Amino acid sequence: MSAGSKLPRWNLNSVYASFDAPEYIRDKELLAEHANKLLIQLEQPWPEDASQAARLILSWIHSYEDTTDLAENLEAYASAVYTTDTRNSRALNEINSLEALSLPLGKASVILRSRLAEQAELVQNLAEKDENLVEYRFFLKDALTRAKYQMAPELEDLANDLARSGGDAWSRLQEAISSTVSAEWDPATGEKKTVIALRDLAHDPDRSIRERAYRAELAAWESMKIPLAASLNGVKGFAITVDKRRGWQSALDKAAYQSRITRKTLDALISVMEGSLPLFRRYLKAKSRILGIERCAFYDLFAPVGRATKKWSWEESRDFIIDKFSAFDPAMGNFARHAFTFSWIDAEGREGKIGGAYCTDFPLAKESRILCNFEGSFDSVTTVAHELGHAWHHEVIKDLPSTLTAYPMTLAETASTFAETIILEGALKTADTQERLSLIEGSLKDACQIIVDILSRFYFERSVFERREQGELSAEEFCTLMKEAQLATYGDGLNPDLLHPYMWAVKSHYYSTGLAFYNFPYAFGQLFAYGLYSRAREQGSAFAETYKEILRLTGRASAEDVGKAAGFNLEGPEFWQNGINLIAERVTELETLIQNLEEGK
Image (cartoon, rainbow, N blue to C red; front, side, top):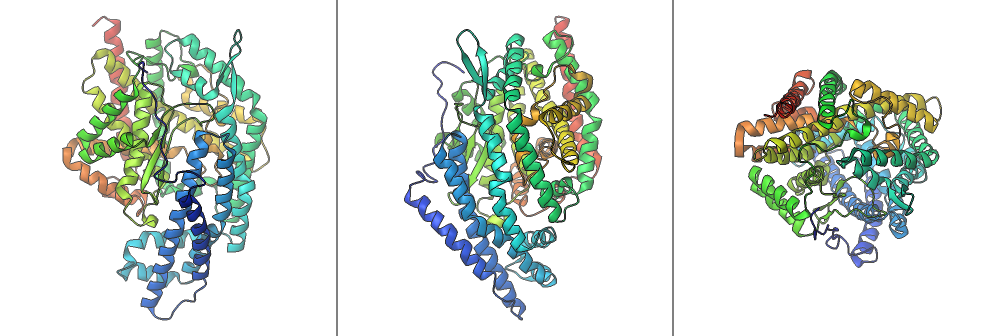
C-alpha cells in the first residue's frame, strides 16, 4: 500500500455500542421472551375453519421472524467482535450465552415444521390460495420438506444443546488456532509471523520469499496438527451421527438440499468441472513459462505476473470499486460509497483477527459489515468487491420478510462473484499489454482456485465423510487424503512434491457441523455469475433492474427456478460449459500474450 494509507476498522455502534449497551441487554431479554412466547403459540390447536387456520399459520410465521431477527442480530454482533479479536473472552462468553438463549428458538423451529406437517395438505392448499400466505409459499413448502428430515422435537432440542459443547466447540477451536498460530520467520531476530501473514506472502513477487513462507506455514500447521485433527474428527463425527438420525442418506444429499439444487444439477456442475481440468493444466503450464520455472509449486499459485506488483492504497481501491459499480448500476455504486463512508469495512490485518474475509448482516439494523485483511494487491481489491457483492444482495432484499431472504450458499456466492466480475471487466477496459497480462492471469488464478482447488476440496471432504464413518482419522491420514485430492485435480500442472497437505487445517469451511461441502457453491456461483454477466453485456444498463429482481428471488425459490428466471437450465451441462468457455478464451489470450512478449511484440 502507498505511504500514509491507513486501513479502516469497522464501526458497529449503529448495531450495538458494546455488550453492556442498554440496547444489547434489552434485545437479549427480548430474545428469551419472544422465543418462549413462540413456543406457547405453537401449542395452539388447529381451528376447523380454513381462514382461521391461515391466520394461525401467519401468526406463527410472524413470531418466528421476529425472534429469528433478534437472534441473528445479536449473534452477528457477538461474532463480529470475536472474529476481530479471538482473544476477547467476553465476546466468546457472549457467543456461548446467545447460543444458550437461542436453544428455545431452535426447538421452536422444529416444532413449527412438525405442526405444519400435521396438516400438510391444508397448509399446501392455503399456501396456493390464501392471499396472506401466497408470498410465503416457498417457505411453507420448504418447511414441509424439512419436517421429513428432522428428529422428534425433544431429540432435536438435545442435539442443538449438545452442539454447543460438541461440534460448535470444535469449530471454535480451529478458528482460535488458525487466527493465532505462528512460525519463526527470522532466526536472527526471533521474529515470528502468523499463518495469516505467511499466506499473504504467497502473493510476493520474490519466489524465494514465497517458498520460505510456504515452508514456515507448513511447519506452523504441523505444530498444531493434533488439536486440528481432533477438531475435524469431532465436527465430522458429530455431523454424521446427527444427520443419520435425521434421515439423510449422505452429507452430500443434505448439502445439495441446503444449496437448493437437485443432485442432477450438482452432478452436471461437477462433471463440467472435471472436464475442465486439462484446460487449467494448460493455464498452469503457461504460468510456469511466465515465471521462468519448469513447473509451478503450490506456493506459485498466487505469484503475481506482469504489473501485478502494483500496490493499491485503500483510497484507490475505494474509488475504483465505487466507479465500476456505478457504471453497472448507480444505486449499487452509491451503496458501496455508503459502506466505505460509514465504516462498514474492517480491512486492517492484526494479531487475533481471523484470516480470510466475510460479510455479515444485521437484520434489525438492516445493515451489513465486511471483514477482510487488505494487503494492497489487486486480489485484495476484488476481495472487497466480492464481499460488497454480498452486502448489496442483502441491501436489495432487506425490506422483505426475513423468511423470504434466507438464500442458499450457491446463490450467495453468485452475487459476490458477479461483483468481482464487474471489477475485473472494468479494469481490463483501460489496461495496457502488461496490465492485461496481469489481469487475465489474475482472473485465471482465481478461476483455478474456484474450479480446480474447490474440486480438490470437494474430493477431500467426500473422502473424509466416507472414512470418518469407520472411525477417527489421524493428521497424517488427513494429509494423505488432501494430497491425493490435489494430485487428482491439479495433475501435472503442479510439482507433486510441493503440494499443500495441510489445506484441511487452513479452510474453516470444513469445520461446520451444519454446512458440509461448503465448497462447490463457489464454483456454482462463479459459473452462474458468468452467465448473468454475459446477459448484462447483451442487455446493457437495463439489466441492473433485472439483476435486482433475480437477487430478490433468491430467498423465495430453488436455484433451478432462479436460473429459469434468468433464462438458464441448471440441470444440463451446457449452461455450466458456457462459463468454462469464457475461461478457455482467457487461457488462449494468456498464451497469446506470453507468446507476443517472448517474441518482443
